[in-house]
Image 1 (cartoon, one colour):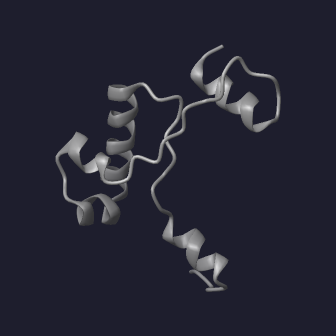
Image 2 (cartoon, helix red, strand yellow):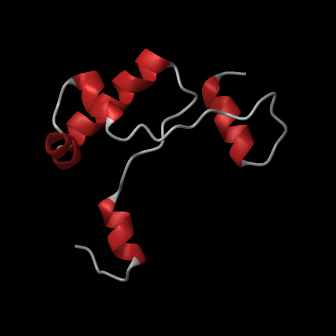
Image 3 (cartoon, one colour):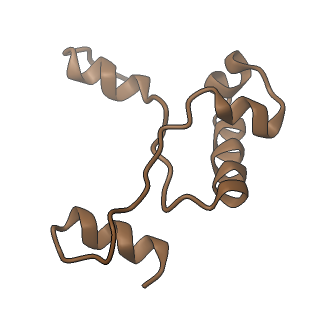
Length: 81
């Protein structure tokens, strides 16, 4: 079973050999790609690149995104365009 299958089975409630390791890397992402936090959070391609490069470097089962402001805004009742 590969990492993707492990994570999918775990969240579907199926039996897995071990729980997946799902860190929230936070500001560690800026260290991997040598970028600033504002650049990381304001540029989606930089965020994507940092997530991919951190995954490749550390070999986590999956990485949880640090923040999605649009989801937070919707959760508080804001209407987005």
